[in-house]
Image (cartoon, rainbow, N blue to C red):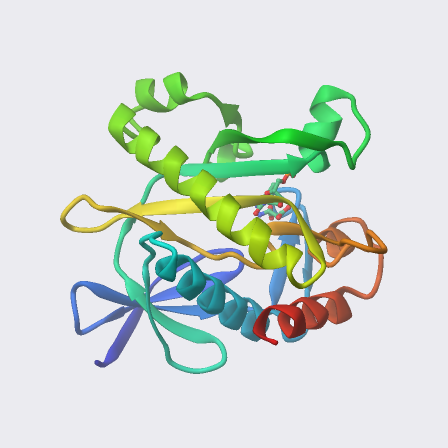
Length: 235
Ligand code: TMP
Ligand code: ASP
């Protein structure tokens, strides 16, 4: 496989064309943004950590029956994935109140829910990724009802698998964001990344934050938190 020209650059990753029309190469950057790009910085070593963590977790999920875009890790920062068209929804699962949920609903962080919740944001930077419901997603033709049903089932399955996985390394999976893609034949697969950028991880004993909230909220120890999560995940 030969890597060809760059086709996309996002806030945290670049995507390159390859000579195989069904595959693209993803390259993870150290760049970090928050609040829709308003806050900018770098987290040294983040690209490599998020690449390795994502690939490890995607393989755990594949074994548990969740189809993903993962194909092959090429090096520290670069991975070959299936070319998909991204469903323009950010799918957020929450097990414990935090972040925008706490703000929107006026409740403290740390309330453990009896059941996980799911919500959708319309993936649109110009609009600041507004919160929408499934009816809005269908009305806007972002997905069909069948696709929404598949996405919901897969997202809750991901939560079941990851919650148990993280519990075993003494981490509470507070919430996380997933993105799904459609392959050429219309199959919905898990795409994007699963990393300290896209999840909230709290140490189960100390409740210390081990994720991007350390960058968003200027808590310090950002690099150490990412490195600690990689150690716990990869063993
Ligand atoms: P929120 O509480 O800010 O809505 O975030 C919920 C989860 O989604 C949290 O784990 C962080 C993740 N997330 C992203 O991955 N990308 C984003 O742009 C935002 C706002 C949140
Ligand atoms: N993706 C968000 C941004 O830059 C960052 C975040 O809060 O995770 O805007």
